[in-house]
Image (cartoon, rainbow over all chains, first blue to last red; front, side, top):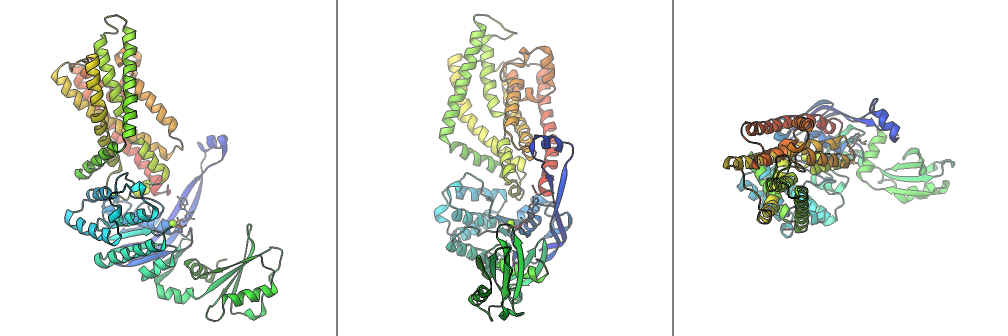
Length: 334
Length: 263
Ligand SMILES: Nc1ncnc2c1ncn2[C@@H]1O[C@H](COP(=O)(O)OP(=O)(O)OP(=O)(O)O)[C@@H](O)[C@H]1O
Ligand SMILES: [Mg+2]
């Protein structure tokens, strides 16, 4: 069981002053800059649950996963994984968890896949019988047969990712953390990986915590979603409820010159939400959020174009980003 | 507990064998260095019987063994600093092993494999061509093997401290060159330490460097005998303990950069 109580993580970075003089000066005075990555994190996850941890870029997902793994120590609060504090008892914790970080490789060995798996067996001190069973299952479901004799460094991204997944599950951990495990993969590999994760959860009741920007990953795998924005949990509940509450809205973004004034189409009335934002590279951005059961995107666009001069526009799909944004906007952000 | 490290050591033996091109170039470079040093000493002697108490034959024996041993008293600093530089260190912290022991196990595995394939044939070849001497006594032979093993462990520990510096240094190149120079000069690989002026010998005594090369090869060639021999063995072990403690302390501070500051 995962138990997170009132966790807060503050990153501290030492500011580097540029130049040689700066380097000399920084030997004596260091300017520290702090950044609150996550705060007030509270949640429990039971054995066998599959939970999606979602949020926009920079929301604090990876930070949370690192706190759960024990790579980071919380600035405040408490993390307990099956009763163990992961940042204090690192080796003890390591045996009960598996992890995949999409941007990092865990199979750092220059060895053929089969041998690096074999090595994992010894590193995790797994009994030969239970290891063999898991090994066969992994090789079968992830279709690794043809890859077993290839050195890890020669694998393609998709092949490597399948091996990484296997490596994370081989020692039958009770919890597996997956930080963007499908990043950069093609549709069929994604599907295979999802099947594998589902199978592992079904057969071994492995708890799975998943972060992903792929809505389909989440819909197919998880019953529960925790949504984080700017370091705070905004939603924790079932995926259906999330979509019912927030996923309804679609958004069309209009980019226009900063000097041009926005003229709201009269038909919009109060049925759509309009947000304004300015940025240096795209100028003035107007986001029009609407309920797709009442409006179509083309209606919205043609209404806006009647009264406004627009440089560019973008229709945002019902992705996590839109949901996150809808929630963020509803909570009074800008 | 121990088995996983043995398996890790074994895995790196496979790796060492996996790069034949590197093996041959390393063999040739090492061989050339040995021939160069032996020719140098032969020219220096130029018919003289003794220099600083050394005769040519035992000095050649010393040179061959010490130059070779110097190749093996290094460790995994390169690998460790890469883990740190790339951030891969965070993944390593999720493994149920002690990272230092893992790196050492792998390095020792590679060292043993490389010794068998490079040092042993080279010693046999040099022994045949230049008539290298045997160890002065059986005891010296046994203690030589033992002190070589301790030296390899000590060299590994020192190298891990150097690798850890990657947490603070952006460019490791300077430090590594500096270390290689210190090692070569002060561990006795280039010149036997008892040829140094007294004050320099005295200075060396307070560093761990003589324990790496001079102690084992000095014992082999009969330069360190009797009571000083046992003292040298004891000091070598003492350095292992001291350096290990320093490594763990430095590591503890360094790791805070990952777990507290986020790398
Ligand atoms: N080591 C660090 N030092 C300082 N700030 C950091 C550090 N690591 C991350 N941050 C900041 O903390 C915030 C959260 O980062 P995190 O990596 O958790 O985001 P994320 O939700 O995983 O985003 P993404 O979807 O892009 O992976 C970001 O604003 C990031 O810039
Ligand atoms: Mg991330």
